Length: 343
Image (cartoon, rainbow, N blue to C red):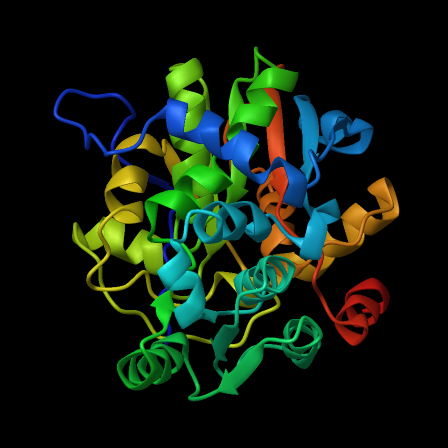
């Protein structure tokens, strides 16, 4: 049976405490990433949500990464990593493992920069995401029933073909690329008190925390995961990276482990994220429907986790707080959208 956590909030180590992890990148690297990736991304809007503000008593704003190129925030990190490859690495070609969105982002940037890309996926990746990746001309390998098994296929291909590895999250260039979201939020709303975003491998939250805490130490960073085997949260509980089982979910982009050899996202999340909040599978479809009906926006299950956390009151007393909510992506199949809207 999958494990769940009865308490909805799991505190992480408080940010900027004595002895906290000091990483080899800084807010200056995020600023450089912002300049580097500008031709490849959209500077997405931060819009006021009247419905969520009325429901929660907070001032809620939505960072619309669901309107981003390739349909998710992932292109920020992918572009920042790929644009820093050497000429020799570009000739060798690149490879990654993805639950869909990262693979799509890597495939698009690779196509635009003339680099051969191979994307390894598990059978749990929805077909709409597989076809989207193929549409950018990438070489797609579907192997195994989990991210870990897809990773094994990628490692085999790296040994055989000498391809260059592009991590989905545990890479400093990926982290600083995703951190440009936090930079943009603080530029648009300098008095932001809480930033909420989906939490999976940690690249998104680590980057946002790095950028945000460098500007505003009082701004709280909250990650939202699924109750069923959240890889980063289980690792925080254990005090080290651990493996978790994967289960089918509407939030398919959030599944999987963070890697036993995780070098960067685990310590960044441990030391700079303020809270991790868990939501149920049953809460996702109503959150997706709520967002469509009140905001006119299509979001995927991973993005629905943050809406569910707000609507279900999982964040505690937030009345009067200024909150930025990252809607991380929109890449969801039509049949899942229809089911969520009509059930």
